[in-house]
Image 1 (cartoon, rainbow, N blue to C red):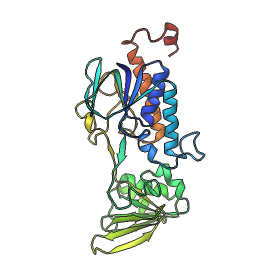
Image 2 (spheres, rainbow, N blue to C red):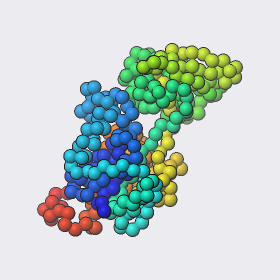
Image 3 (cartoon, helix red, strand yellow):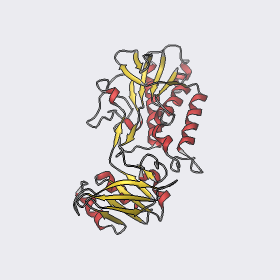
Length: 319
């Protein structure tokens, strides 16, 4: 029986673990795969405060885990497949058939960039292939990059990349001048001299040895293949929340993201959600960590009415 069971060991989940454990709550994190989630796939991380010198995603996430373990957070290996979140005692069943019980649950399953399955995409991820301009744009200062996608997010991120890159080439499947983004963003992007367009085309392959060196582009009308030298490829074709196992357990929006209020509360009492799987404006390590801190404190307040003897009245008054 845990006071707080956290599903997911990304930055949001581990921060929740730190705060909950420091609050003297019996806390465990159930992790499906490697610690750190999507953040651990970023080879360089310069935008998390205090970690700008030679910071890597795996390195920073390792520090998160070390911090959580220092205060007593227990890390469990397993994949949650069934959840009974009704009542005061929550039950989580893992893929191996194990059942875990907890008085409160923090959901931190994360999300992942939508992959197009293009040859070279996975191999060169973090080596020139990126899914986040806010995270990685400054690594491409005065270099050439390609953007895949033409919706609101893709065009906004392409505009952002022009602050750093020498040239930004957007590959668009539509005819010349046709974009899926809003009209205002389209007008601004089409007028930007640093943005170049490849119409009626798709990305066929990304090439390079240790780093991205070029992209092979296919014209949809002629079938012709052409090679464009580039230093980076940014994909903006959406993200996919890892919430299939939560359907029917908590409220999700149309895209599958978990709905919460500002205190990270879901529609189920004693159940909270943090990080990239939550419906929110900005998905970054720092916002996931903020979510985790808020969720843990909210859970702590919730548990005050359900757990006796965890702290003295003097300790409770300090909360």
